[in-house]
Each structure stands twice: as structure tokens, then as C-alpha cells.
Length: 196
Image (cartoon, rainbow, N blue to C red):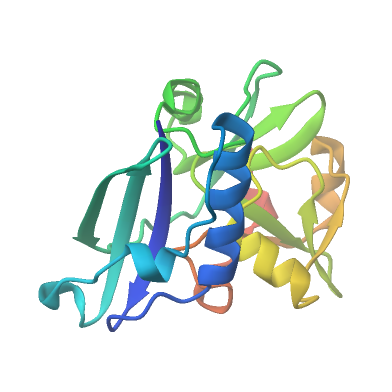
């Protein structure tokens, strides 16, 4: 089973284009004879979720299994712990996140993990990451999962991809976490000194 998590802002679903592309890519890779979905057509936002920011979650196989809504409460992330795992594979948004959860459990006293695979920085446990080098925001070209916010920011040329290894982190001053729920401009800056 797969999931698609999406933001609802005052009853609207922003960025359906990139969600639709990921839904189609996932379903095309795993099921035969699929028809492209439009998230805006699949989701009917209930009245209680039409004010403020809500988190929507579509669970699906070849067909829609369930759609859930919950108020969005962002986690405050101020520190990241580097964890190494070459076996992690999460190139589709699987419902089963056990390997990610196991890595998250290694964060110690830090707020989240920054996963290193085959010597390259990838993602945090629930978000892509971008780094500020003083001039540009850069994101690893080795993400575990190509997020929808990442796709939009790349398309808009607000961020660029590059290979990032742990030894490169000292070149940056800040990191930010981005995903469908985290609006890039509003996400807190994480000082590079807070990545251990």
C-alpha cells in the first residue's frame, strides 16, 4: 500500500500538479492498466477541514483505499543527527516506513535524523532537505524520495541539485526541511552547527 500526504489550506489543495505526477509514477510502476488520477477530483474536503491548515492522507493500492484529514501541527526541528544506512530504499511513498522509523529511533537527543546512503546525504525522516551556501539553496541529488515541494522548487528554480556528502556540510550555513506540508519560505532555519 502507498500513501500520498497533501496540504489543505482553507479548503484548497495547492500543488496538485506534483502530487498527481507522483501518484501516476507510483501507480504506473506497480499496477497494470491504470488511469491517471487528479487529486483535486479524488478529494472532497469536509466542512470541518475548510478553515486553516489541515493534513490530508490518501492511502491507495491500484484503487483508493482511504482518505483521512487531521489538523496540521508542525514539528519544531532544530537539530539533526547524521545516520548511515546503505540498505534504505524509499523511492516510492510506501505506507510501510519501518526502516525509516528504525533510523529515526537513532536520533538520540536530536529532533530528527539526516540519512546518509552510500556516502551521500539524502533526506530527513519525513522531509527533503535544502542547504544554504550563502548564495543558493541546494538540495541533494540523491534523495530517498523526490518530494512534491522539492519538485516545485526545482521547477521554479528556487533550489538546485548537487551531490552532497557529510564532509560538504561545513560549506553551508543553514539547512531547511521541506515537504508537502512545509512551505519553504516559512520553515525554520537549522544552523549547520546543529547537525551532528
